[in-house]
Amino acid sequence: MSQYDPLEPQASAPEALPPAPADDDPPEPDDLPERGGRGEQPPDTLAWGVGFGLLIGVPLMLFGGGTLNGAVQRAFAGMSGGEMLAYVVFVMPIAETLFFRGILHGSRPFWMVGLMASAWSIVLYLPMLDVVNFPLVAVVICLVLVMLNVMYGYVRNRNGLAAAWVCQVVANVLVLFLPFVAA
Image (tube, rainbow, N blue to C red; front, side, top):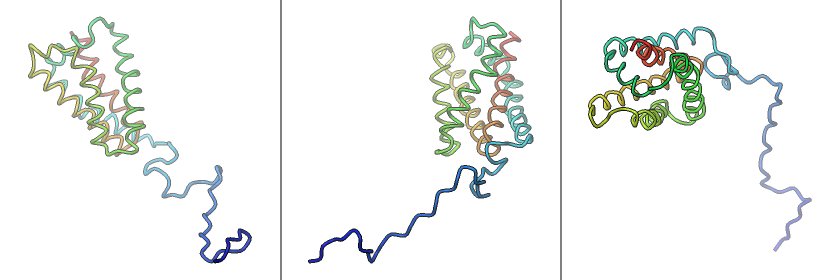
């Protein structure tokens, strides 16, 4: 039986790992995000965010205007116009975009993140609606929330985080703020 000698070279020594790149080394092209790289996004991604926000917000505003007015008034009762504007432009989009489409989106498919964000929105807003007297309206609002959140995830997947944020801001202004101030 032979004894182990740490100074003798072993027959099956593992291969050495390649050195880690220095912080100032530029990343390889394969390591960069598809659009923009290093967190930078070209301006056309923001235009796509506006376009997708209009694509989903305008039809909802046109075809669900009366229902939206009532639901938004119930959900955001007691808020002034300025508070509501700050809420739909800054608070909601930044919090939801950073958490759902920023943190969770990196490790999950966009549709799964959309469903998780939808579950959050439903838990947050459904108790403020009159579900007992208007169950069909509640179902439609839940479907709209799913549709919006999956769309935001798709935009994040296609055009990046900034575009998803802009998309949510545009959709929020059309679907929540304008019905709020119109009533």
